[in-house]
Length: 595
Image 1 (cartoon, rainbow, N blue to C red):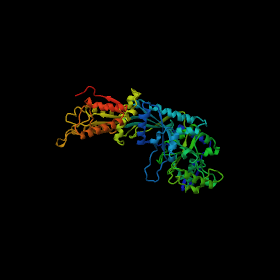
Image 2 (tube, rainbow, N blue to C red; image 1 turned 135 degrees about the vertical axis):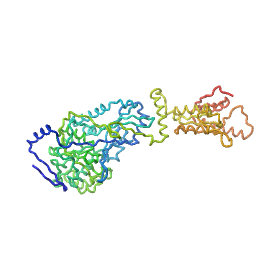
Image 3 (tube, one colour; image 1 turned 180 degrees about the vertical axis):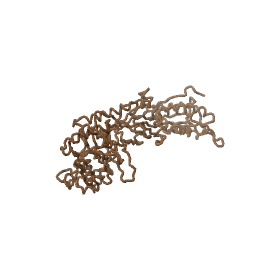
């Protein structure tokens, strides 16, 4: 018997067979090759922003250190937003940003409450310490463990905790090695999915249908508004990734809810919600998922685990699935909710969930216009005990393998230098000197009295150990004999036009440190250290000595550690007295060198 029905200028042809023929048809399909189309799912693609990698590098450097335990992360995907026929379709994408590293799901959701138009996914990242560890990791075994969790959810018919565990269907994993010295990351995302060895096929010879081709405009708008009404009952008004639409279909065909006065209702997918439906509602339920894919013939990757859930947990043999692709899932604000609820209460029938269709056209968050949703009727008659776990993302060349991101082109040179220097120090602390306080070293202010051979060497060593505040004091100039002995000077610092002399050593040394490492705070002070036994002849000399003494007192008082790097015993006397009076740490590195 053939039934022809007309919907929105389209004709649907349905073949009805007597019930006793289904058994023989099934055996015939098994005996010969099944000609029904195979459902081809569009794989998920990761989009990890630079802010994610920079924050992750900082976390690795300062908190995780050598720890390789999995770290929870969170990602989001949005409904496909193609709104015109000429736009290029895009595959489903999972977005990872700096907020993905929040400590827990509650923190992430609360920080992203203003972004409730996206779907939140739970995942984990495994940060390995070496490239060799990344290569040796048994990646398939790691993926299988995630698949076991999904399979356990699908096989367990317990009602308790089902609403929370449904998030496992959209879980993901990333394995990564961060090369903090080269500022690059090798990573590989996986989106685990249960894939039966027997492929999922459509229940008939027809493939996916566009929802707007089989539904009239009012039905599409009713569905979108029902989704919005479901969202305002959810935490932070986020749309659940999977939900059940009731009174949308009847016998796999559009259900004329308007004439029957029955509203379209949406409820999050869970075992308990499904079991609470009447038998008629179960038979006609449409299982929906928010589809981030806009490809016209392929549902997005989230549908893979949905069909496993329906087949393994609910025991369905045929399922009617809606790949929900509104023009956009609009952001819902508190003001919009109050307005929406007020209109819903004013225009409801006896059912609290009913939303009058005339208000759907005005609703700002329904996203019904330019709807590209798909209707798919699929067969779930598979051996769900015989399956593989798939989901590793292909690389930029379209082959199975990791991806590489180079952060050096987008990072500030000063920041890169600081990270590299800090990494060396922290590696020494993690492996050799656990009590080394690198933060204290970075805050310590060092005063170097003398910018000669000792001053240059000490300054380079201090900088290598993480000291970030260095002040030079010297009144000499760079001569031609200095660069070969004093590492901070070059030939360009010597001499000058008309033989006026070289650059001041203190100024040139500070400038050289900043060229070597922009993260250092280096200062040069040109001053003479007053020495006992050195007479001064006039009032001008006396005033200069008093000024130098006051300046030296001020510098010693402002710094934490004083290095005596001068080459005469007399020049070390006054700094020693002043440092002792202020109880400062003073290091004498020139003992015994005298003229």
